[in-house]
Length: 100
Image 1 (cartoon, rainbow, N blue to C red):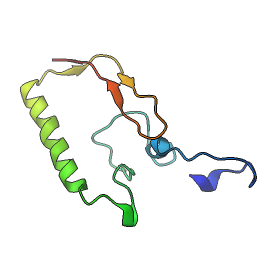
Image 2 (image 1 turned 30 degrees about the horizontal axis):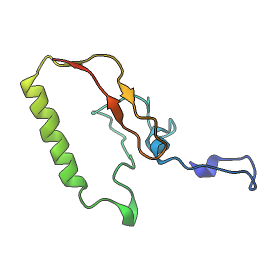
Image 3 (image 1 turned 135 degrees about the horizontal axis):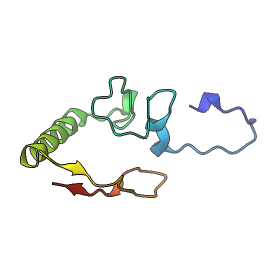
């Protein structure tokens, strides 16, 4: 991502981790939440020596939680697009309404 900047060495640049997984060169429809996305080299758990050791546990917990919710509420649907937290460091939902 930084290698594509061409506005001169003396200009200021800001690296925003919240935008790391939203690059259209790496993700088709990057703003769409897609659990079935095949090419998914996201940075949510870090990379290289900074990769999160707890990522398998987090994935398992998320799978159990989502499957449990869908078992309880099989007809659940999103109501609107949700409200996002306005934060340049961490990206997340502030509010997400679901119709059960």
